[in-house]
Length: 498
Image 1 (cartoon, one colour):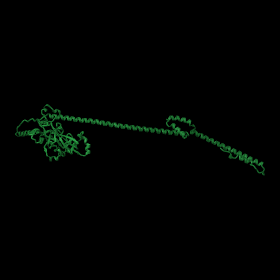
Image 2 (cartoon, rainbow, N blue to C red; image 1 turned 90 degrees about the vertical axis):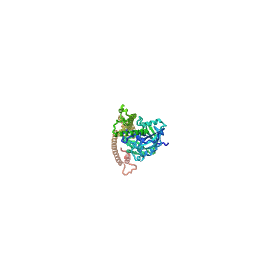
Image 3 (cartoon, rainbow, N blue to C red; image 1 turned 135 degrees about the vertical axis):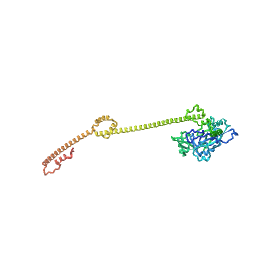
Image 4 (cartoon, rainbow, N blue to C red; image 1 turned 45 degrees about the vertical axis):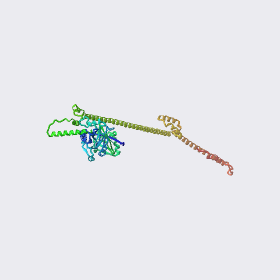
């Protein structure tokens, strides 16, 4: 058999007369009208067969599983139910019958509808099936099913039908608040949008709520194959029950009673009203545990109490689930908030470390600038005070580069002793003294030169006079005269004047 991508079950419920849903569209029908869909089989000749009928599902209306089928798909598949198995609780190895007929009925009244009437409908309607249960397979189950269709039985409505189908594609229907009819919803057919919303679907573990006012449901489309009907005691849809021959018999009896009452009223015959426990049990609904009293228990069946208990358990379960999810969400939010705070703290810590590092670097740069400035000032001061060469500067720079003020002050005192010969002030004084001494020497030399020049001139004059007296005028000198010798001996070129 072909494997489908998805499978789902549509449970059906048919309750009598009174709705249990706060929905203006929901008016649950009596099994009496469904009885008209029971296959026409001679049960006298076929004592091993139990003919049955039931509403399989409601088209155009979502069920409690969060699934829905529209008119187009319902029409496409309703005849494919024929000859499909009827089993117990969808156990395919426990087949107890088969489906023989299919059709449509009005939602809320179960009035039969034909195909042409259904084609134009966008509002809810029933797909109704008829078939047989094989008594020979499980006579006990067959008897229980027959008993559950008898309105006078304590097992009334205890058995319902749930059908299973296979399919591969779906759309998503968005409905507001508690709306169930898809004619009032938005169809999402785009694949990307479906993928985005699929996690809200109940079948995939979601809670259906897209937001506080909108729910998401799955619309089955495409190639859809009915896989069979399962009879169950725990259905989950808008109709419930299985109709058998006893249902028809009850209908006939009820119509006869109604006719008798009408005739009685027309003849003005006053009769004491007959207490109809069956109708009361169908009309009565337990709203509170206080409604269960000794008196009320005499007028209602165990199924009414069971339905109330089941409904209360369901509500308690839903409350527990909601509270659990709220706590889990709160816990998740707390964890996420804690993670966010932790992350923010780590980020702040990293930023603080970065700021501290930057401040340390700035402080280091400041100290280096200040140290360099002090060094420059100290070298400048020493250069101004002493006449230093490059070697002096290199040695001093090496000594003072890491000195504090106190050490530098002590070092400066030592330099004043070691470099006293290079002290610019002392050198300037010495230079001034040397200049004065040089000027004095120059003056002294000039004086001495003048004195020497005077002496030479005197000697020369005296020599000239002597020569003029000793040498006759007629005599020619053969040798240098005495004057010439003195002039040569005392020539100014022979003296260095300072």
